[in-house]
Amino acid sequence: MKRNVLLPIYGVVGLIAVWYLAVWVRLVDPVLLPPPEKAFAALVKGMAGGKLGQDFLRTVERTLYATAIAGVIAIPLGLVLGANERLYRSVEFVIDFFRSTPASAMFPLFLVIFGVGDKTKVLVAAFGAALVILFNVAYGVMNARKTRLLAAKVMGASRLRVLTDVMLLESLPQTFVGLRNGVSLALVIVVVAEMFIGSIDGLGHRVFEAQQLFDMPDMYAAIFAAGALGYGLNLAFLLVEKRFVHWAGR
Amino acid sequence: MAVALDPAAGAAAAIDAPHITIRGLAKRFGEAVVYDRFDLDLARGKFTSVFGPNGCGKSTLINMIAGLVPPDAGEILFGGKHLAETKIGYVFQNYREALFPWLRSIDNIEYPLKLAQLAKADRRAKVERLVAQLGVKIDLSRYPYELSGGQQQLVSIMRALVVEPEVLFLDEPFSALDYEMTLFMRDQLQAVFDETRTTTILVSHDLEEAVYLADRVLLLSRRPARVADLVAVDLPRPRDAHALSDPDFVRIKGHCLEVFQREVRKA
Image 1 (spheres, each protein chain N blue to C red):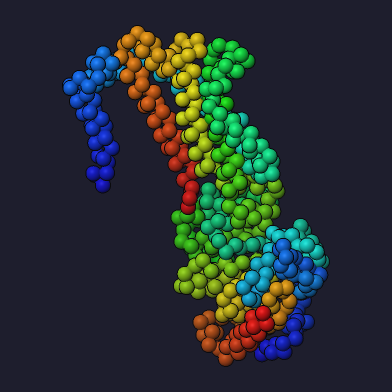
Image 2 (spheres, rainbow over the protein chains, first blue to last red):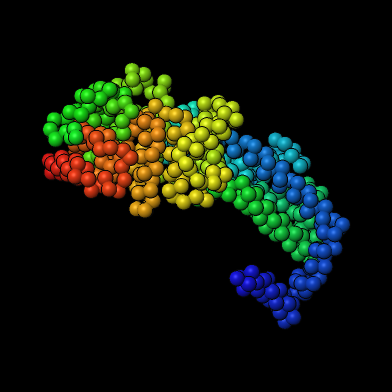
């Protein structure tokens, strides 16, 4: 057991070792690849009251807003679509098409409609996340155990009660899959949006600015902060899921 | 001992007060005619087991009676009333998929009462009365997945009984349980029936179980299903393991097997 807990650390140690080795043998120009301790120093300094910390919070804020908007729209819609399979089949192609369209391709359109600002960044991310969540919720409902629906029906549940008491809960495990994928996608879109369209803050902006200023330790610090954020968001959703969907698969 | 050795169908039913009357029932799945102009009376306050060849439509029959499968034609009445005016309980074979895993066992049992808009206190009181009546010793604050298979099926049975149904349906309720648990659950079910005398319809693929539990064994033919025989099992209750070797039990079971094999061979 103890070895299992330590296993992930080997990979991290290995990565840092390779990094040191690359710096030591001058595999890469030292300006492009500073030693790890410089990047980590920049990370600690930036996060502890520096600009990086503020940018981090802005990105968190936008990502969570986008996911929340996506969830509020996509979860009820997914339930209704999933409960009416014919209806879902009739819009399935449209959903799949836009789900497969890179959301970044929508920036110019959203820019025209919503202008340059926070609204556009959040809404493009929400658009991408909503389709992922919608698709998962609808499939969660459609794959609800038939026996459970029949059990509710035979006990006298109305169609609405079956939807709220059974289908909603049956789809929860799949809904959480959608939320986790959605939040990851929202983060990707938000960070990209922060890099380009008239941005003044956010992790994407920090990465881009550090690159422009050729401040490599800062750039690596921002990249790691973004990575930690993505990992942390996924982990947070997993923990919430474990708490609320303790019964999944049992 | 009134054993209907006469193969004429409906011999036992003639003396029963009917509870469920089925007239002109028809059902087909694609090309397969499962029921056609099917008539049947099921006795009030009796335990009826349904037994027949594989795929003859045993489950389809009780699912049509319980309103889970719509018949193509025909009428099913419960003492003259329609299903909507009748309280029923249904126990599925697959308890794992029939219970709600997100609800604690007690909330599963209370769910049909909640649908009937009973107040919390009344719901609790009804469940407590049922627990006392059945002598159930399960910790009902646990989630279904924390219970054994038999305990989960007992919770399903309690969920079906808590509304005090006029008719209780059981679709092969014990076939997912191991033998030891099956024997235990049969006796639990028998005790429930002795206590409540609710009109009960059990689909079983185990002839011994069908006869052991029943007052009437309904033997169906191959598709399209007809009543091959309706056999009375008037052995005294409560029945225990000794009943299985009782000469009357053996004779009735032998007769049922004979009818069953005759129907199987007709194919």
